[in-house]
Image (cartoon, rainbow, N blue to C red):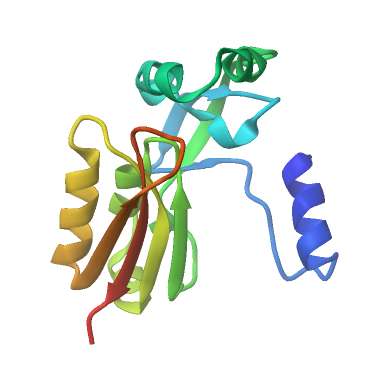
Amino acid sequence: QALTKNVETLLGRRGDWKIHGLAIGREAGEAEMMVYPRMPGNSTLEGYMSERREARATAMKPETAKRLEEGAGMVKVEIRPLSSFAGRPTFLKVDAEGAELQVLQGIGEKQWEALRVVVGEVHDFNGRLKAVKGLLEGRDFSVRLEPAGGVTDAYILSAVRRL
């Protein structure tokens, strides 16, 4: 509901957009997602939950971490790869709280051909930053990474397809 309200505020009620209540990943399926209603941008798939908690413990003030946990709980979600959606985007923004590599691995071949720019936030644990960078460079993107301010394991990614 919050997402619908935000999109309507930004884009209006024109009807040329649609919200899908699901997670994006490497392949279709279901998973448990930890949802943080007080800070929904920190919600993450179950597999990354413990890793994210450890990273937040060093990055957040104790009162912020306590607020984050208020009302938090697990929710079962459908997962679909980007390849299951029609269209060939030229720009992709990814901020998947630890699942960035899986999102990129779910891109279809025709979508890769169309993509020109990929931006987002990538969390560097268990070799994910190196894997994301390698995947994009292997797809002929020039990749730039900069530390994200205030989050110890996060980097801002800018990738542009080489001409």
